[in-house]
Image 1 (cartoon, rainbow, N blue to C red):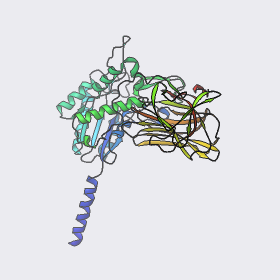
Image 2: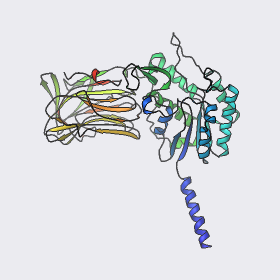
Image 3: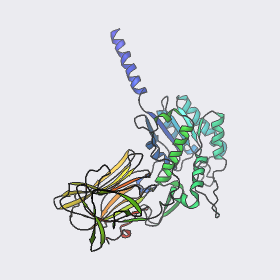
Image 4: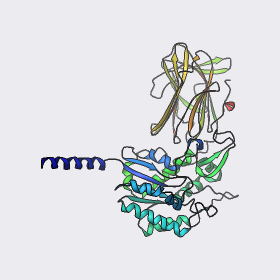
Length: 456
């Protein structure tokens, strides 16, 4: 009897532990939601951005969405059954199809409207049989504007079928179709390009000929679409809403009219840099050099803070600097720091000193994702002027010294929001820089080395 009681107690405790585990949200859908291969970056599915909004210890996102799939092919390839087999009570399934179902000219995926309706109903019933929670999502909009700049839809009757299935079967609905239309109209014909996979020739190594895709998203577009889905979670009062982070990294950004403009900050005075008022720490000095004026920092208590994030709202960027690291400073010198105001998203440029040599250390953090490029095998002499660049193309960060790539690594980030920039020292006033800075330049594009600015 005592043995049986012990077994029952263990089973109860195991069940309790499982019940306290994270809720799984399964994503079933097409390419607009799906994960992307490295060779397709910076294309990003909005499902990839969704985990950034949830507390990871409470909610786990499992993305089963697949490029080119309709409800019919998702079922035929057993992808739907793979989700059903894993479902447990209390899980969620976000279901978004329609792009490929409506493609009459593609017989490999086309699903007639009534079959589409039946498939959605079957999805709902399968999820409910497992005591999980289905959520229907209408398809996201494509970017479609006529010659006069008027927006129009290309999905026909399919979004209304999703709405009617949700209403008839009392299923939670997130109307991504209408939400994304609102955003596209807000951005307009030209500004909305930045939400999609649109690249000029040679702007990205994956697309040497460039690309103009009005269906699939850039990292910025994916982040905004995920934010729309989260908006729907709150509106529908899903229990998931209590596990959302208080500060959302991918808030629904309004179009930034200045984000497409390249900005140069010249360090020829201490009052205004790049047209921005400064807050001066210590006593940095404006010095004359053969190539013009620069600001010198003493490595002890000199710094400058500017209340601006020069890369806010950009999904790709290049950050360049012309600087001179001097001998005699600390081993770690974090001389450029962008910090977002409301969350711990940041970008850092650092020099690490080793005697009379230095090497570059760059760092990007976005939500739970981060990467450092620590180039300790690439050392340079102190006391000379250098050009350094940090380039992010939507999927990979790279850094360069005098036009030569030293390190790179994959990274997925959401565009940063408003923030501040600290120069000569980390934002919290540690790791002071000893040396001079001549200029900084910020470009909302992933530049190739041949496009970098000169040292003068």
